[in-house]
Length: 127
Image (tube, rainbow, N blue to C red; front, top):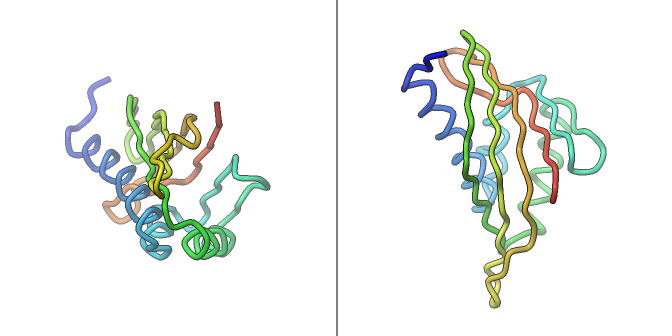
């Protein structure tokens, strides 16, 4: 299946935006990467919808100051206004020792809303 370059780039940009906003303490920007009815699995109990996601993000940016998320090996499949996206991640602690804290995989479902891609489901699995 051929994927429009614009869609692929937009999904890659969304993934980067997710990382940057979380790592630089922008809870609202991170929240904006999700649809209103999104689900985040793998971070303890499932987080359902923007209220639970917002609570998680506010806690994260208040308590985690020295982490950087890196994603790679992106696989993207688009079907109209829905898509799937899989990537590997590693999280680096940059507070002094600069060490890899954890690695894993994201498995995502996305939808296009108002011309913008949003995560509807993000499943986080740790190695």
